[in-house]
Length: 418
Image (tube, rainbow, N blue to C red):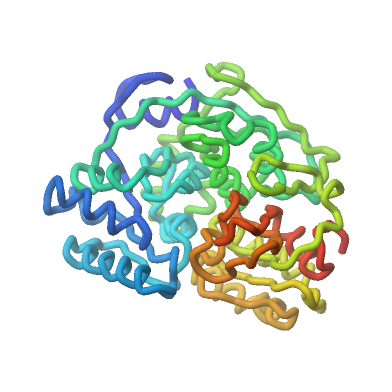
């Protein structure tokens, strides 16, 4: 059985396989300021009380602080729903991006079934959780019943091996996107493994799982191991941690039944860049070196974590952002922002000429902060570069790691040169 099949089977107490349609209990349901209002509307057509007010998490992150009256009204509706239903776990403006806040606050654990009103809910697959996104109608039903139906997905196993000190999790996932294609894993599970994956920290693992949806995948899973448990040590009780270790789900890649197996060796691989207008339009950095940029964005649920900021600061320290470039830096959470302040990273960014914004989604979805003008080019550490993604269909977006983003912001063009 694959990791996806094993997680679902453990939850159901019986074996299920790819192609089976199942009804399953949800361990955690999440919506944000952009998806709560419609989810609440659908919920009210079913009942007037949520199934479990302690298993729902609501985060304000998409338009924070509110930039339009429409956004403000949606946030008002969300606040009213939180009060009405006595939602225990809620995080208002400034706490950060939902996909960072949930694991940071200890809500995400291995073997869980997690439903989110956002497509990048697959991020939590990095913890060995079956975590996936749903639309508002489905989330309304989940709020009401605590259940949903799922067709057990087929699995593509991606083995990543080799050593390469200049390659980050972002480079790896962009290379995988190129290999699989933007529709290559539609309604499938991506299961990441190999020695390189085992060596990654949780931040880089979350990058891989986060972008599974860019290939159409339902989930992006990584087997829980000591790296996972070490991350959780300070976030959950010792008793919970011990229980998770005792109920660990493992896979033997040679014995499992996969739809397809892909092997990637990063030895000697160049840093990767996704070119307009799709995340799978990926090229080695040497093929786009010298491309003019107008804006650089370092942040988002993909690469706004502390290690990402440390990497960016390393290349910006003592330097200035190019006169023709705007650099926007947004920490993925308040906790990360405070740590970056304590480490002096924010000073480095400000001294270099960067704009620092409230923890949240920022420019990523094109609704708030950093919207591009006609003909402008942005290099971003985000997960999507679709036409119009950052607010203007007449602009272009390239995707890269924080290292490439920082180096390019100084040079004024896409480069891996220091």
